[in-house]
Length: 211
Image 1 (cartoon, rainbow, N blue to C red):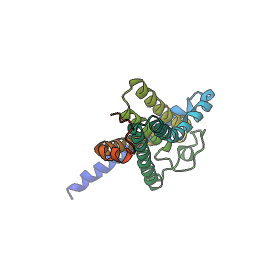
Image 2 (image 1 turned 90 degrees about the horizontal axis):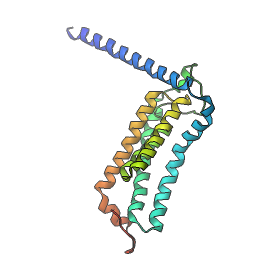
Image 3 (image 1 turned 135 degrees about the horizontal axis):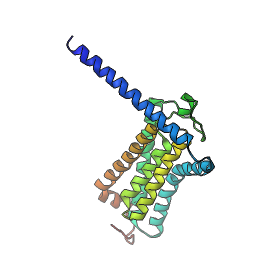
Image 4 (image 1 turned 90 degrees about the vertical axis):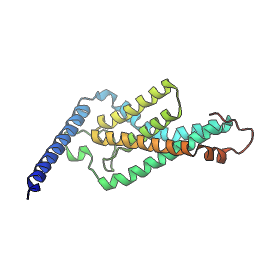
């Protein structure tokens, strides 16, 4: 009996916090969606598509560069990138229909839908793909300009999903963590087993290994 008042208070506090968070989530989306520069809608639509386009292009470029320059390290980076994307796809697949969150434009008529979207809202696949790509590349390369450029690109993709009215801010934030997590896990696995992967990829003596 002594615990009942405390449990009731905890339940009230949890419910209040959840409602406050949900209201803030929606208010932020309404602000970003309703106050976007509509003349830039085409640019936002183009930007959001690059999340998947880059996902296919980057590993291909890394692998071809490694092949023609005879650099095992670049080929290894291509496989590391693909593995990170595979983890990301697995995470998205597990969460999309398990959480099954409705899109904001379905639940709230104050949200204008600009982009096509039919699957559940959480997580944001575009954002997760962009952050998987960006973080894994940041972990691969030390060039400050490159790092700044790709992180800015990933943030803009995340913003586009909000401005286009197809995701809540919480969808996007969760997807940023999801994509980053896939990138870190992939990098950890490839660094831990670095020598084994190099051995598998070294197919001729004239391949130049750059560490």
